[in-house]
View 1: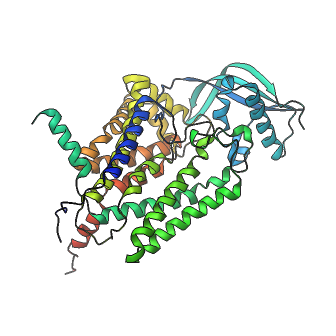
View 2 (view 1 turned 180 degrees about the vertical axis):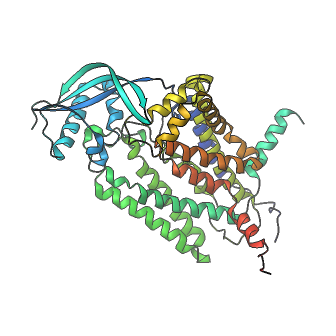
Length: 151
Length: 299
């Protein structure tokens, strides 16, 4: 059994060039915080966390009042809807309507009545108590009421 | 030799150093198995049907205005599973092995990448499949004619294996680098990780072991020590590329890190740990070493 590499067994120039180009792009996107998926800026928990956090929350409205939209009670395909909600102020009117209609549709599909969807911005403080995480509402602001009148 | 010359020499050796075709075959087979496992574990067809208002396509599939129909996604998943099966099947035939494995590997990688665009098109960057995609990418152009018993090192096999390690190194380095770029050393030397542990996933299920998260969060010194470990592990990961002797330590570090983030934050990055384990360990060499171990005899 030989442990020496044969002399002429180097990879082709094309292979080397393609691999190094992809590697360079991955590095450039990673260091430059560019999002050209699958090239990515690799921002994983990179921002500082503090005791308070502000987020957008969707509420289903029915004749009995407001109920927070719980994504665990919606189909699997809704799992990342909260992240689209986080971009709510940047969405144009069509995108907002489309998002609201999607949330209303999902709620109705699960058998819950919807007269409208309300989007709030809420600031909360995390409160750890006896090994459980609770949050305390500090601020709340209504940003939109949408999906109105659809049945 | 100048410092620059020494660095260039080290870079060249790290990238083009020979490896055994057996190790490359294990890597290729391992990645094929991971593609299949990932599809079975978290099938993309569960994302369909989805209202178009929830679809935010990544640039690669910008031409789509909604999730593709379930039948197409299922067909893609079946194709990856068939390609995986084929890859292992044709390995038995010397006449079919090289071409068959090349077609199967490229098919599985391309279709897996396309399927991975679907969870990535939901409004947030999807990192969970990226280490698998990038770690396996250099093997697309690697030789496929090797066998598990080929133990004579070659530079072609070495370049593929070393490139895979390089891609992993860049991914982890950039993850740590971004923490320092966005937050500076405060990411470590502040109450940042304490609050991250108290919050957990803001909207997700509670993590499996919140008590451990709170145990660390309740102790500022332990939180900062953990933060230092995370950044050192991520930024320092490139050492595995230049200094093979560090690989064992980073392998242990990867498991500590990913098991820890799962238990304390509920973040499912198991396949990162699996990929690191597959790529950093020289499995044929390990198998040979185990085989050579003398069997203890009873008195």
